[in-house]
Each structure stands twice: as structure tokens, then as C-alpha cells.
Length: 394
Image (tube, rainbow, N blue to C red; front, side, top):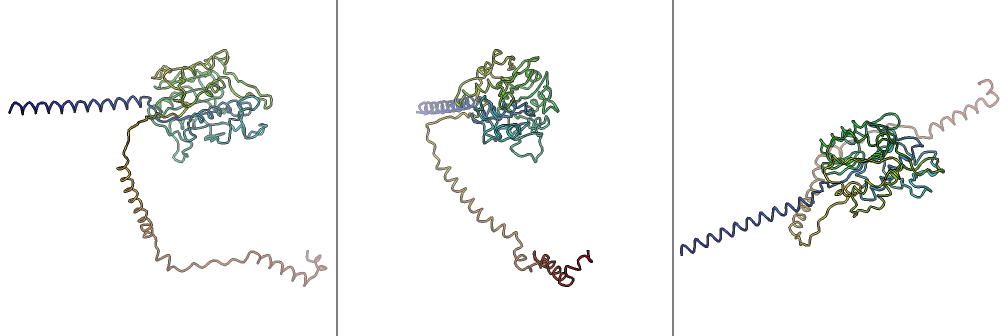
């Protein structure tokens, strides 16, 4: 009997041990699945779109930026997550034959200004200082939410810039410039302050590749419209307004983005090939050595869209317990709402307000009293002296 009892105890212990190990294995498997599910690393998307050029002959730079703005909004990034900086308002320029419009295609086929454009920084607000403050978060407390880049360490950020540049610099409004060193240091500040998960930098300017040569922060992928020593050329001249409508590189990038939808599986390698030298005339460049993932595994919508991963389950989840908690929370909230007016009323000096005497008002003559008084004086004057005595008075 004792041997049978000991054998039963041993089997029970072994079964408990197996059950415990199976439970821990299942828990670790669930954790691995969750880690795999969130391995993309980002939970939100932001875009900073910057046009640095003023004056009518730079119409194409404004059209470039507004076209990218239109594309990222179409793919799901809301205005609340877009910081749009336009150095000039071409839609309201007196030389614009069609006010309140900016076109990016010939024959005025596509108005990229639209009815719902939200410009966050315009005209003389577009400066190197303000741009760097937006990136690094070093902005005054009074700055409104729409002018802030409220990103975090789970944010994928698209930064697009266009304007006139040279070897290692980009001009802002023909009055100042940002260098590639300043830009690289700003990105490093963003990384140290955990303001991004991955960053895609695109620049359309002359010698654009020089702007990403000094980058040294991790998780940055960069694209440029031209190599060092090359010009970035314009595209689509419009005789009706007398200027070019877009730049070549941005035109072909946007033509590529028009084929993208939120469910598209197109990757960044496809974006690298959209504008060969035969089309752009200049040689577009890209840099991926700082980026941890393989570009062929990076979807276009990871930066140009706002696509969230979801998990569909067929399990039934009971909400009864939650509903009881919600009902109790609502009851407590109603009690608080009932108590709040009483608490607020106790703070008011009700007795003083009721029993105080009304303050006597200062007397002011009616509006027409002064005018009537002057009319009376003039009538008495004419009755006394008459018209014939006027020459002796004046």
C-alpha cells in the first residue's frame, strides 16, 4: 500500500511538472508571437514637408511640396501628423492667372492646393531656426500643437525638402542656408531624444546627395535627386503662367506613388528605380548603410502611409465584467457631477452677492442731447442778431 501511495504521489508530481513546463512554453510562445507581430518597430507616422524657396519663378518648388503633401494624405497620414512649411504662397500670388490654385501638371489638370490644405509654417516663418526647432522639439511652450512634431521612439518620419542648393548646403529664402553638418546634428539630437524609430530623408535640389553625406545617426534612409556636381532639372514648362510646374525627380516619384494604395506591398527598392538618368538627366542617389533593415523588406507605406498592423481573432471575449466596471464608473461619474455644482456653489460669496447694494451709475447725457443743445444755441443766436449782423461778427 505504501509503495502504491508513493508511486501515485510521484505520478502527480510529474504531471504537475509537465503541466507547469507546458504552461511556461505556451506563455513564451505567445510572447514570441507578440514580439514578431510588433517587430516592424513603429506605431505612428509623421511627415515634415519643406519648401525653402520664395518668388514666382520658384513656383515648381511649392508644387513639389504640395504634391507630396497630397500623396501622403491620400495614403493615410492625417493633417495632425503633417508639418507643412511653404516659403511662399503661390496660390495668392498676383501673377497667378487662377487664384487659390497650384497646378503640378500641364494644361492645369491637377490642382494640388485643393480645399483642405493646412499650411503650418508660411512665408517668413520658414527659416533654418524654425525648421531645426521643429525637428529637435526645442520650441517655445506657446507654440500651437499644429506646429509641433510630436513624434516618439515608435514614429516613422518622412522628411521631404526642396529648393535651391549646392555642395553641402540648402538655401532658405535666398537669405540663409542650412548645411549638411547642421542637418546631421539635428538628426542625431532626434535619435538621442528618442524622437524617431526610422527616418526617410528625401531632397530634391542641385547636388542633393551632398546633404546626406554627413549623416551618422542610425535608422536613416536617404534619397536625393542628383549627385555632387550635378544640377537637378525642372520639368513641364507651362506657357500660360510662364514657369515650370515641377522638378523632374519629384514628378517621377509622385507618378510612382499614384500607383500605391494602403494595401500595396511595393518596397523601397522599387522607389530607388523610379527616375533613372535617362528620365531625370541628373543621377539620383540613395544611402542605406545607416538603415538596419533591408530596403527590399521596407514597404513604401511604412513612410508614405499610415498603415497599422491588426490581428484578427475568432475567439469570443466576454465583456460582462468590463460592462459592470463601466456601469460602476458611470455611477461614480454621475455622483461626482452632482457634487460638483454644490462644491462650486460653496466657493461663491452668495450672501455678499445677494445683499450688496447696487453701485450707482455715472450720469451721461443722452446721445442727441448735445446736438439738440447746439441747435438751440444757433436758433437763439439767429433770432437775436439775424443774418444781416453776421458780417460784423465774423
